[in-house]
Length: 557
Image 1 (cartoon, rainbow, N blue to C red):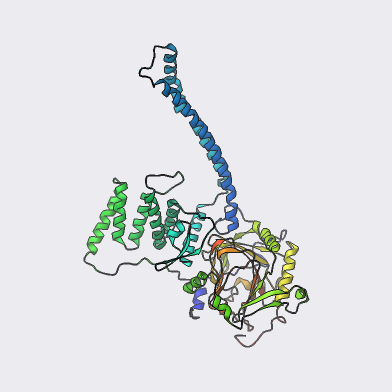
Image 2 (image 1 turned 90 degrees about the vertical axis):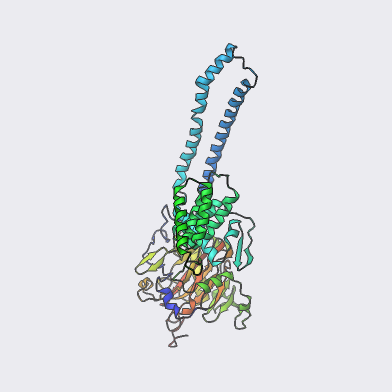
């Protein structure tokens, strides 16, 4: 457990999660949903966007198929010409005395060979491919998406303690000391190439993150060594490139001797490289200067995250993948059919599972149907934009929240009206604006997550108070999809996590009855390991609940 004294320090750098779902800030009166995203928005931050990227690649496959067919036809014709000319040279003496053969020889050398060598067919084939690529290029992910996807793999590596070597072979294996455990077994294995691993390492290197650069470049070098001499058209990196980056990463990390060893290996493949030769002399000089100095070997450590003081607890809860069997042996926790005294739920009560008492956290099973979840996802999909957090008066994109979100008014479809009515009946709270925000639908990206944060405002200057309806008293979060692994909701100080349960809804109070924020509700969305995670958030505010959740003078009530 993390000491509560760290609580204030944790949230001071950035008050996370404070987005306004009512009034101002990107609302369209005509449609009742947020503004549609423009082109060029990032792809990696929502699986919905990644899914859409399949369309341009299918078009590129069609273009490449046309190019390959054209090239195959061209090469068949070249083979025909080659065989025709070769057949004339097979005899011991070619009978040039034959005027027909003599004529064709001169014609070939004066005309035919020139036509073959300067044929426009090859350039026409590649031009068609390039022109087609240019047409779809604006719909392709940007370089920032490649960086974001690479950082996502590093995040999964860290949070779930994954073996990079295992990931390169398409396996999700946790490494603890000398033990390697499969934490997820995909039905289809997707291994990474040497160039794939090289790019992840290069992204880390360019960020000055030599810890991750070394782990990924080590695997890239190993894979490049195993296929040295071969070349794939699509590859950008090579063994020499990977050795170059890895050597300097080790040098930056303080391991000069290994940087020297890798640089010497580089010179075996490229003996004339003067830059590497200079590096070798530099490393040798540094080692000579340090030969008389003894000290502990520099350990390569994972980069520090100063804003996340609860990192160990957070990651430990994520690693349980929501599985804590001893937690459910507590006698005070129970399951029941809930009507909350509402006639609306009398004939169809909701299955309620009390997960925790302080703070009070409840899971309502099958709160929505498959059809409702699908429709809500469909309403939000065209309007998804990168999720932001409040930073003073502004809202900004941050690395510790990777998702896209959209806000839906209840005027979008009667389903949303029915959903509000159901939430009100179950919680007994007023969920009509301005006493509650519109429904926020969130789609997580590659390794999508949201590090520990509060849903309620922790500062009196928070933009939440612009709604003039008080703080967020409660959160009602609906899981609109299932995932194959990861994505749990971790409650840091309560010390447990909740797995993604499709169609279920998670409810908790953010404030004590005194109106003070409940520090024990610090929670996080663990990175999605495998799958497409969708949730819908309904944030309910203090005002309008005066006779529904009465106040108390006791601070902890």
